[in-house]
Image (cartoon, rainbow, N blue to C red; front, side):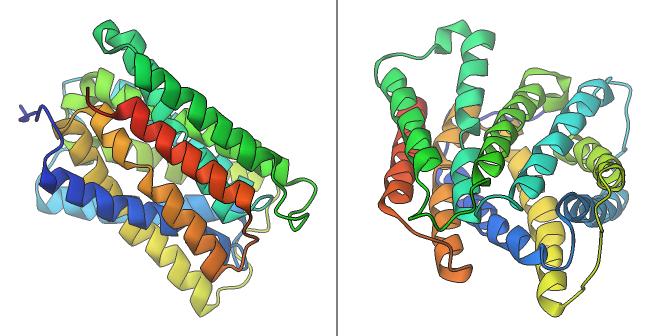
Length: 297
């Protein structure tokens, strides 16, 4: 149904570069909006905005929201994991910094690499890829142990662990999309299932946890929420699912190292978050590890 490329061409790399920049900035936007919207409710509202736009898009293009191919079953699984991923990211950012969160979340390519290793044995990790895994986990250790000169709160480790959990769910979601019939469906349908479930589940989880919800809608808060819903959750995720359908997953993952670097820079420059040698070294090791794991032979 869809043409699959055997390698990441300049067009795909260019699209991915833009996406990674947006995803890096997103962590800063989430942190800014926490001043007026509680974390998990913020994630839910983001999905509500995005799924509303997606429904309009699908209606205009006459794309069915369901079909006889059974893609809704893996779509429901992917949607639940997608909701868990962002619940952990948004909630975790109330404990730790945006620059630290982005480093942990972008361990997701290693989950993808491990899954591809199981699903496609001929693509098992070798040589430089194994070294990349060691480097990346060394980077995580650097970031996890570094306290930024004691500038972080004592419970920042809670948010760090949530970031690692979010990375696991992101990687698993990517594998579900690529390894099931969901990956052969129209990209907007694959995204629709995930946004719809997160738009339902996240506000419910927020209410169950007793979050205050929306409490101070300043221009900065509204602008941050609009950026997350319209630019990131709708436009960039549409592009990402199109890439997943048309390009090899390991090669896509190799470029996502750009997002942690953008996120770290954004957290330091915009949010005035603590910057340290440990954060720099950890981010560099994670980025280098991701590159080595996913580099072409």
